Length: 415
Image 1 (cartoon, helix red, strand yellow):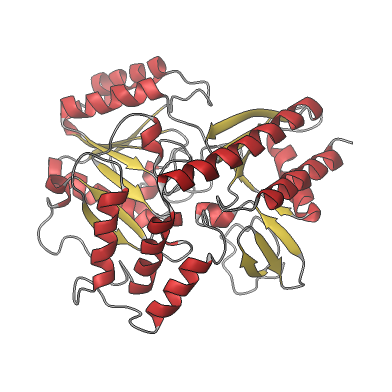
Image 2 (cartoon, rainbow, N blue to C red; image 1 turned 135 degrees about the horizontal axis):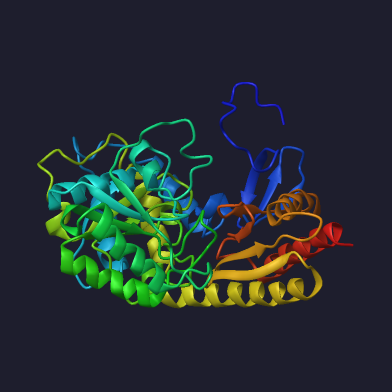
């Protein structure tokens, strides 16, 4: 694929150019149809061009396209934050800031935590991903390709092993590492925040250990540390619930969201306890495009569509289809390993075999899958975990067709 005016530092997974999309199907410029299991890397939980979102956006464009909220407020922003207060399942009233991207939400959460605590240090986790801006980069638990050649990054940031049944690290190991950190590296009263994904995205769709989550919540309360839960990829229904922290029985102090929040339009948010969100001086939060009127209209529509019963139904149906397909693949293909994640947020580990590494098997599968008519996405520190991000609204027959395409692609790798 010829990209003469695009920076060579951008990594392209699939060398094609799509022209249009409808729910879980896309067509390239040559008219070839594909089933999309990439979903904009978690942006399209409601699929390409959901009719309700499209109609709402069209009407909004004719009324008001944009107003910088911190200069001239508009009703769409106010309606979104009011809707978020109802939509996010926590026991306190939310204070909110809308942003353009998940990375921007992360950056502002760090500002809020520093201002509220008077501390600077942050604890993050191995294999985590929180964005590509400079401060967010240092939170990421992976050097290549995100931190390479950049030198010193904003900090201080410390990393812990991520405890998960999907990753082989037990809660006791992570807690021991945290105890050591407080004894050897930095005292707890200098830590402003701990940031964690309840289900790691780039890290391979690994679910945080539930016992560790409870201990972490208690520890943050004990030491006055802000618990930031990053649901930029796992939120808005991906796991069968509105937010994945509900699987763990805890609540965040600050919550990050984005990706599927506005069904493909740029919108994200940092929300949380008012005492934290109000810690910065007047004017300390804001942004020119943050809370764009058209994106706000999309977000309101998304939240209206994502009631609990629909999310549960969508999640259970997709989970059942993936689990069944995975069982068949495990029986037939030596490189297919464990299933990770929860609900419809599922990853499949590809193992090393005699003739190739797991990463090599997965790279070959991405190419073979594309030829078979399905678009796939890798993840994991070694890029050996297939992450499945089909829209939650994917028609059952289209989902089955996409999984069958994966089977055909695997057959070409392992005749």
